[in-house]
Length: 114
Length: 110
Image (cartoon, rainbow over all chains, first blue to last red; front, top):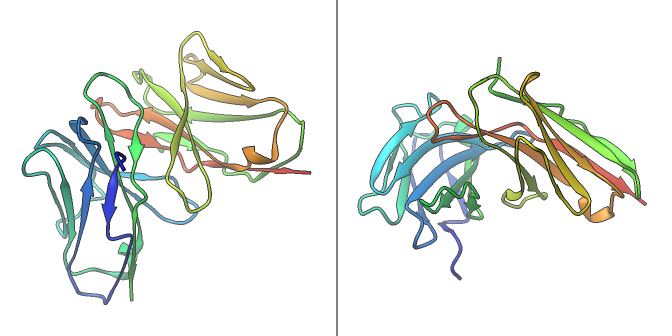
C-alpha cells in the first residue's frame, strides 16, 4: 500500500490520559498536514510540516497538542491530558512538493475520550 | 466571518437533476480553490481544482467568481453515486494551510 497510513484506526481513552497517533505519508511527499474532523463538520486544519519543519499551527492547537516530524518522513500527533472535547477523527494528509495541491488523506484515527 | 462558508444542505434531488453548490471565501487574496468529495465515514478526496477560467470534468463544472468571492460546483445529470458531502477548499493567507468548508450534503434519490 503506497498511500497515507495512519495508526491506530481507533483509540478509546479515559479523560486525562495521553495519546499519540502516527502518520506515514506517501514516501516522496515532503508536505504533511494534520486535520481534525467532527461529525457534520469539515476537516479543521491543525498543523503543517514541510520536511521536518513545522511551518504553521492553527490556533485550535492548544498547548496540550504537539506534533513532530523528526526526520521529515513519518509524523506523530500527541494529545496530553485528553478531554472529552478532543473526541474526533484525526486525519493526516500529504502532498508532493511540486505545486500539486492534491491532498492525499489517510483513513484517519478515530479518538473517543470517555 | 469564517474563511470558507458553505450551505450545509442537505440537498435532496432526483436522479438526472442538475444541482449547484456555492461556497464563499473571506480572503480576497486567495489564489487556489478546490472541491473535495467525502463519502460517509471515508476520507476526503479531490474532486476537481477550480481555475479562474472555470473548468469542466464530465458532468461536473467548477466556476470561480473573484468579484463576489465565491466558487461554485455544478453537477449535471445527477447519479445515485453522487450522493456525498462536497467540501470547498481554499488555500490560506500563509499559502500553506488548505482550509475546508463544513461541506454540503447531497442526496440523490431514485
